[in-house]
Image 1: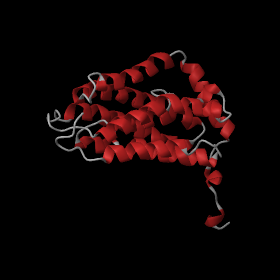
Image 2: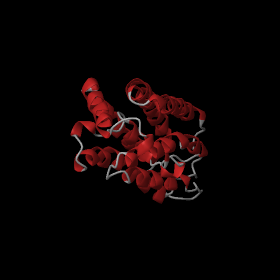
Image 3: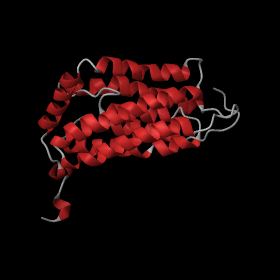
Image 4: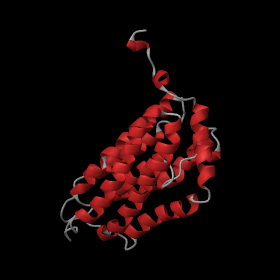
Length: 228
């Protein structure tokens, strides 16, 4: 068969129903851990914006929290569970663990933000919208598309929502090391999008659209004299 005759579905190692059951079993196995984890994720934007503007010093609290959930998802969900139905899951699992290390290292390696460097309002607003979408829209995408509630994505618990939430947070980060944290969540969003397209999910467009918005906001230059 010529390679041009192949489709994404030909490279899928599992049935869509198997993928949904993976999430259902995962949510059932860790319940009620989802509750404190999601609450911890909701605290992050409050910490960073509690004074009405971006508080860079609060990133040193937010990034380690994210680091923990990235490592956890990489080991528990991707390596131990997703790896049961997809032998290639070891690679994204390693990427998630690497991202956790990078988040932790960046939290303490980056110098304090100069007082006259500000996050552009457009980047801040876009980042917050993407974070809100990761918390609200992605969990609703499953039931609205006809999939079970228990197969939903949750920020801090499952990979898509966590990667998207992280991309939104990076748009609020003022200094250059934020670019070091872009590749892994961006690559995961690409991989997950291809998987969803292969499974013919009608909501497969949501993740790449929001990820692209977050990356565009993150790449906006941080300039002197921009108000909070």
